[in-house]
Image 1 (cartoon, rainbow, N blue to C red):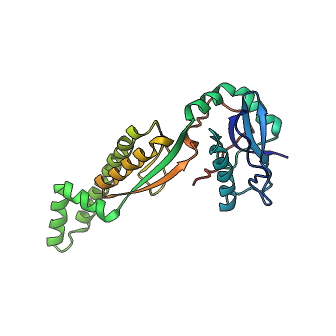
Image 2: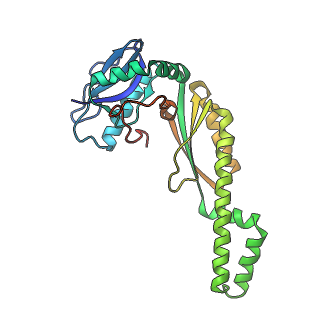
Image 3: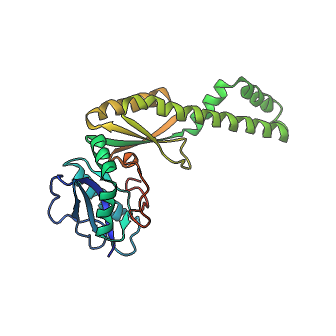
Length: 256
């Protein structure tokens, strides 16, 4: 049977609670595979695993329980290896990388910040900041709406101005919050979001970071911010050297 991997930690990590269950129905029994100074938290991988809410929560629960006792490098939901020997082989092959990451991420959590525009507010901001758009809007209004070409030109100008504002705001989100974090990871583009950024934050600095988020909200009322965290530091494990084909593959983030 293939092996489901939740995370990687030090072999000296405190023992997990007895009878801890993981993914699957019934929940698979979580166990520890040790290789030198490292260990992997695993269970038997169930057939037909899908990213349903119950399974995502089970994955997150294992990481939360283990993370409460010490640093854990979280694997993304759906990380599966062919067998236990493959897992321990990867631990041995990438031992230096994983040890470095455990040291670097000890005592740290991830906050993911996504930003989008409040439609009415950003339109007002664009109109206020662009005299040419305001003048054309007023000219079209006084002429009964303007010609098709005039309306098309106005629409193109508004779209271009909003895109420019999106780029400016995406930069502001990262630059405003970056000083309150230890590291930053820019996520993939996501439909509906102008910024998708993860921040690595010390547990004892979380209040400072969240205060910076509130200041960003106050200074940018045209932005809608969604903050998810504290989370295991998914975005900061880093892939390191290439893994052998068929080992710990990613599916979907447990926190999404």
